[in-house]
Image 1 (cartoon, protein in one colour):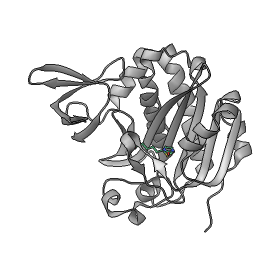
Image 2: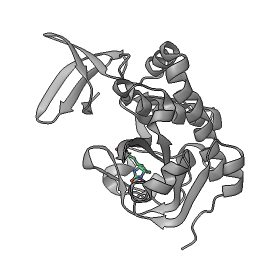
Image 3: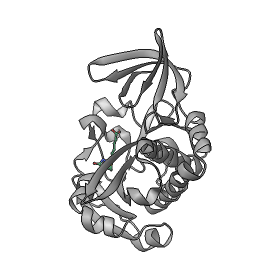
Length: 261
Ligand code: BTN
């Protein structure tokens, strides 16, 4: 099977990356990033990148389906270098979602892309990108593993039945292929901007998260373990929590899955 290739020299030239660990095929870039954390953290910001991920992991133990042409990577950053306080680290995954939204909106300007709390990116009602942020500490150094999957040149027509109607790709939207290195650089550049914005202009970051939030004003059901919370979405607060107006008052969700919207 032919795997799409990346221009790693260009990637290093046009991003703030210090190192790229590329493999043609990997089970999961987040798992590889965890296994190689010491050298990756030493050279952070660094990237684990593959052309074909075979066992991608999603939030809450879900799987992430990939096919050749999808963009799957994990950015490793030293959490200390980010100047984002520990309490506000959940905002990093929102910032990552915004960065992907920004990049896709520029690359496919005929389409609108939205953030869906906590960090999915959708076109219409279909998911185009998922994000899994994990934190690991090496001795005393905390590292953030920002894993991002974007459906770029893979068509969802080839996806398992339970996914194909709920998801889309840039190829399915535009009818043409995109250069994967270009898409990746666009996302990494927006990610640098959005993470810097969290410290420099936190109000602007929050206002953008709410401006581009698909769930704003909708009636939702949020699943938190065994509990289901029903309410109208008021917005996302300064700690990255989803704020719901429920019959018995305001509820703030720091985690959970939006089961109905
Ligand atoms: C989700 O939607 O639940 C999150 C999906 C995250 C998938 C990406 S693909 C690259 C990185 N490696 C993984 O194993 N998962 C993330």
